[in-house]
Length: 80
Image (cartoon, rainbow, N blue to C red; front, side, top):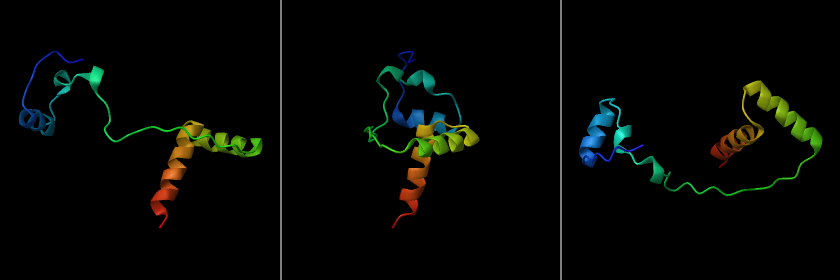
């Protein structure tokens, strides 16, 4: 949570680059990731495929959704 302290962007960058904690200068209540709009997609698939996905996700210690996102991102990165 921000303490209300204000510093210049240059000072913020310098402190961050020096490895100092700059969290006191961030208003987390209004923070967001610019350019990241989440859209939902539904995909129907056979139960057997979901079971295989769950087995792979468990092996990697991630959720089914995280596994699907990782695999799709890898595929999209390698696609022409």
